Image (cartoon, rainbow, N blue to C red; front, side):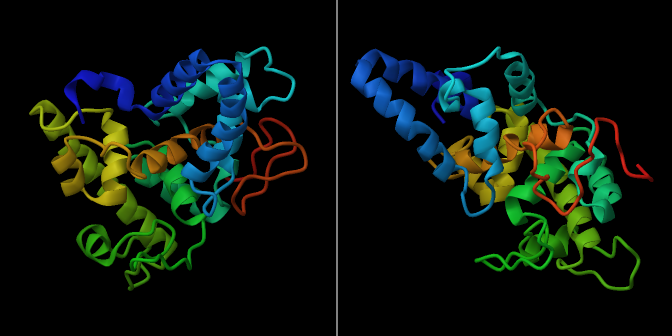
Length: 268
């Protein structure tokens, strides 16, 4: 990452800079931008994994609003959560009931990684499909490779078996691995070996490995990893409870959506 770019590597900042720059190209170019930019962003964030990043994108940027925008009040709150540190309180109904405790515990493994980071990452990685097999040997909810599960996994639910396909074991290993990455990223930042947002760098390292981040001195420019990071960040509002599904739709998980604000199922 070039030193003179500063925070321009932040996905939201990049989107805003790009949008601002293209408006100077003329009316026709701007119309093309309005039509194509949401589509490009949609593809970038991984259509195969989730539709929700586009929903959040449209909340942040009014180009998706057929009415030409809105009051913007809710958008500001959503933007703050998307760009934040991910340490907000987890909104329980957004997570499958069986795994709320595990997600919270994984998010408390260290101060750098919060539970909404864990939940959003699971949503983006597997869509809460505990039986998912990844293209490169990843397995389970958190899509951990075998070597990383061997290093950070264990029998989290005391069923005398440790397995990536066991949701409890998978989530616990994810939390430990993310905290290990966050710690190593902190050292690299202190030593000036990488540049960027600590959480973004930890997420990127989960996606492509810490060595790639070291070699690039940050998130590789122009890589799909930027889409991975922003795709997860764009899910933060759902798991923080500041963005709710549209009428008639549910959260992108098996957990039921409460009919009224504060209507939390028993046990939460």
